[in-house]
Amino acid sequence: MKLMSFRDRSGRAGWGAVEGGTVADLTATAPSLRAALTAGRAITVPAAAPRLDLANLTWLPPIPDPDKIICVGLNYLSHILEGGREPPKMPTIFTRWANTQVGHLQPIIRPRVSPTLDYEGELAFVVGRRCRHVTEAEAMSVVAGYACYNDGSVREWQRHSTQFTPGKNFPATGGFGPWLVTPDEAGDIARASLVTRLNGEEVQRATIDDLVFDVARLVAYCSTFTVLEPGDVVITGTTGGVGAYRKPPLWMKPGDTVEVEITGIGTLRNPIEDEA
Image (cartoon, rainbow, N blue to C red):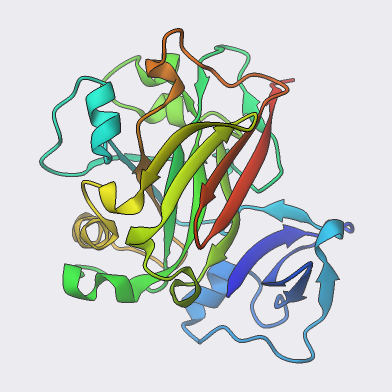
C-alpha cells in the first residue's frame, strides 16, 4: 500500500491510499496518517472511500507532523571515505525539525545566506507503534513503511561546528515522499537501489545493504535512547557522490530539479528555488 498526505484545492489537509492516478481519501477514518498509526488499527480502504484525482492535490510530506525526525549521518562507507573519515563505532545522530520538510513536487528552497545547498538522497523509514528497548530481532515489526528523502544540507552552516543541526534545518530543505510504502509492498529493502539525479544526471547510487548501520540496528539503537512514537521518521544516511566533495563543488541552484529514486518505493522529485 502507498499512503500519502495531501492538501486539496479548498485547503483541506488529508491523507489516503494511492491507487494509480487517484487517492482513496481515508481522512474520515483518522484525521492524519500519524493519527491512524497511533490508533494501532490495520489501515484498510473502504469501498465507499471517496476517490480524488491526484492532479488536483498538493503533495505534503507523508508524515507532515512527526513527533521526531531522527537523522543518521556517515552511514554509507562511500560517503565516509569521500570525507576522509573513519567509520563510526556507533550511529552518528542529529535531528531535523518537521517544519523544514516539503512534499513531492514542492520546491526545496536555497536560503539567501548561502549558496552551498547540497543534495543527500536517503532512505527514510517511519515508526508504526510506540516502543522502547526494541531488539534487532523484533525491530522490523515496528516499521510502518519506507519513503524517499532528500536531506538538503547547507554545508557552510553545517560546518560551523561539529554539530550538524544548523545546516540541516533551514526552512523547506528536506524533501520527503512521494508516499509511504508499507513493508509488504516494498519487499526486501536491503536489496533496493538508491539513485539521486540532478537535472537528470546520476550523482549518487548505492544499494541499501551498503548501510553501516541497517534499519534493524537503527531501530534498536534509537529506541534505547528515546521512546519512538508512531509517525516518527528516521532518515538513514546518504551515500557517496555529494556535491560538497566534488571538484569543483556541485551545489543545487534555482532552476534545478533533484530526484531521489529507490526501487520498490518510487521517485521523489523537487525543483529548486531561491528564498524570496
